[in-house]
Image (cartoon, rainbow, N blue to C red; front, side, top):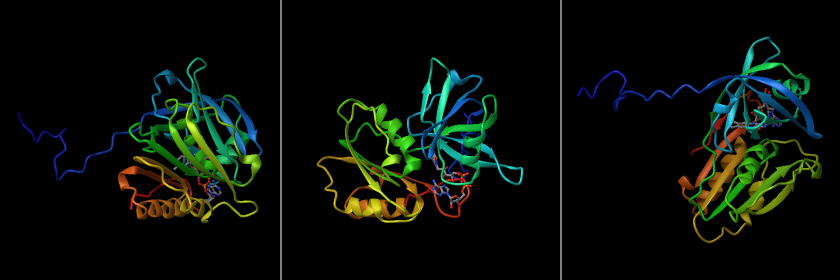
Length: 254
Ligand SMILES: Cc1cc2nc3c(=O)[nH]c(=O)nc-3n(C[C@H](O)[C@H](O)[C@H](O)COP(=O)(O)OP(=O)(O)OC[C@H]3O[C@@H](n4cnc5c(N)ncnc54)[C@H](O)[C@@H]3O)c2cc1C
């Protein structure tokens, strides 16, 4: 058999990433969930075929001011298989394409979407689970926790502006949630979660950490956990946003 056939990647041939599935999402409904959080429910032709792992996101192609479309990552907050709808939570942080879309969309509006994608998903092998993030990460963290086995040991350190941004959770996990308030400070690079992590005694057994949010915060927390003995393979981390970056995501693997 010809091992060098054109379809079989070889060592010196970069493996091409498979194209993500494409969808046309149609808005069904949109509503404010909290003062700075708006949930949009979408449907799509063939939605019953959408398979994903809680924690994964999709890329939305949203209208920009210049009339072009820009890529924005948003987590799948949940799916209602009976109704054929997918929910996405938009943090209404400013006058930018994501919040503008969520704030103005009407039933019937459509948006092109690719996905699902993403590696920040539950690791069932771990004895305990550590989650950190800010408002943009609650959809991923909460959706993961809604679906984990009963008794899963989870520790959450969640940075939000104040009480009004906290979210009640329905989970069978043994979840310890600590809300860390930023108060009047702007969201962005800070040491709020890192400081709390520094005084967190890592539990016995093999843990897995899910570290997401503003990129420099994610990197600092990842380095801190590595310095305390967690292996790189025990940390799933991704930069969800950072000041000055428009859309996209940052790999934080160092
Ligand atoms: C895998 C993944 C999943 C994500 N899931 C969600 C989700 O479910 N819900 C959600 O709301 N976001 C989520 N995000 C974050 C979201 O993609 C970014 O915040 C994105 O920048 C929002 O696009 P935008 O049009 O609002 O702002 P952009 O046009 O992308 O950014 C403009 C500027 O706004 C500022 N900015 C961007 N985001 C924030 C923020 N959250 N707070 C304060 N300032 C900000 C930055 O300075 C940026 O340069 C996710 C990101 C990733 C990578």
